Length: 158
Image (tube, rainbow, N blue to C red):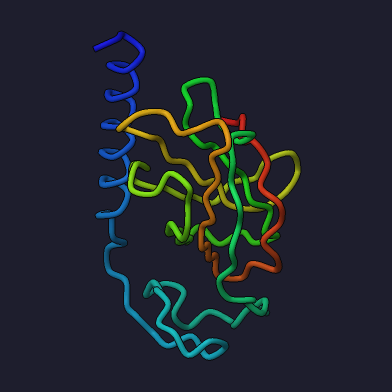
């Protein structure tokens, strides 16, 4: 196995472990209350349960974004920033369609500010080999409070 492939496997394993670590964290002493604007549960801490209600933005729901090789980092992983205008730390992303389907590793998203824009970062790798030069994938993304799902740009931030 080449050194690059070993490095890639280690990086993908670390990414999977970090994803797992963040996905099992749950806020302590939180309660679930219905969100009146979307009829979905939201987490409310006891300290803010009786705080004045803030103006909520209207969510546009889920969106679809296209990623390709222009969003690869130096290790061959996808590092995409999707401008949404939202600041909610929650986000969801799933694979939709790809010309290299089944070879992608776990997909991870998190809220980020990048180049003065609010949005989400999406990252995933290819543990079973690099995709073709004409690689593309469509992803379904969601961030509560997003005003749009803009064109993905290469994420080069921390």
